Amino acid sequence: MEDHIRFNEQDAVLDLLDQRKLPGVEERFLCRTTADVVYALQTMVVRGAPAIGVSAAFGCAVALAETHGRDWQTSLPKKMAAIRQARPTAVNLAWAVDRMEALWKANAGLGYADLLACFIAEARRLQQEDIASCKAIGRFGLPCVHDNDTILTHCNAGALATAGYGTALGVVRAAFERYKGIKVIADETRPFLQGARLTAWELAKDGIPVTVACDNACALLMSKGLVQCVVVGADRIAANGDTANKIGTFGVALLARHFGIPFYVAAPVSTIDPATPTGASIPIEERTPLEVTTIGAAQITPDGVPVYNFAFDVTPAELIAGIITDRGLLKAPYAEAIQALF
Ligand code: MRU
Image (cartoon, rainbow, N blue to C red; front, side):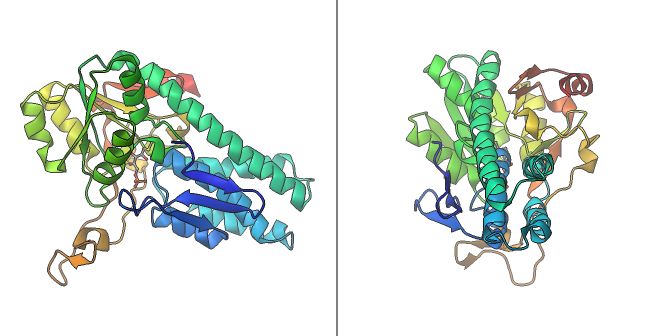
């Protein structure tokens, strides 16, 4: 699946598959303004680190087009800053906007129409690069899995979370192409249910066997020998290998260590942030309590009781068996392996 992020050049509209409505309804969400782009990122119409990076790059083109060429030199930086700040944890968002900003700087003499064409071409390039990255991650991840393995994954690090193919699910897809005995357990991933709704949807669509499990079943499943390997995605990898990913990932990594199951992170190099020294400096997004206190229209907690809704946690590097990137498999010590990459 590679068409969940589309860009209509004629009208400069970013056209997204609305991930909030999956798996029940396949509906598109159109972003015609910067405010639409920010809204789509914040409410998770589109989510997943690489996918928000690609969407943000197209979002910069929407932001420029919205000016219709009037006063754009003054207003564009503010619009791009709003996109950059839409979500704090996944570094791909800032990385993509920075890349568009650098392009603008390098082509400072261009007029409105030429810069718009330049932005659109760059965003398309980024989209294609991300698909190629995911396929490379799949290839580099192959030695980490074996025929008949059941791979447990948390959240959705699949085609929907990238420009296509996926990072953690890129490894699953490559392994399934090679060995037909691969199976997946998708943690449901409370509260937004990316595993139950999105991972299960895209794997089932591709005919890859997937079973959904409640997040709190992980220890039991591992103790029963039902999991041979864990592969998850990442939102930001610090310079020492500490990895932020969807809330609950750290717990899965601790359980994997307890049961002697290898725990891998799969992510493109664009998710590694050499400017963040350790996981302690990764900003952790806190989202609306409503995601926890309600299911659909029904409130499930008593009135007035506060909740925690941290969207991510940080898995310390020492729990990670390997980081599968688009430039190869990184092994500990990660600080050295990461330094060598940059
Ligand atoms: O809040 P989300 O759904 O954007 O969080 C997504 C994740 O945590 C993914 O695992 C991560 O971005 C990797 S996506 C290839």
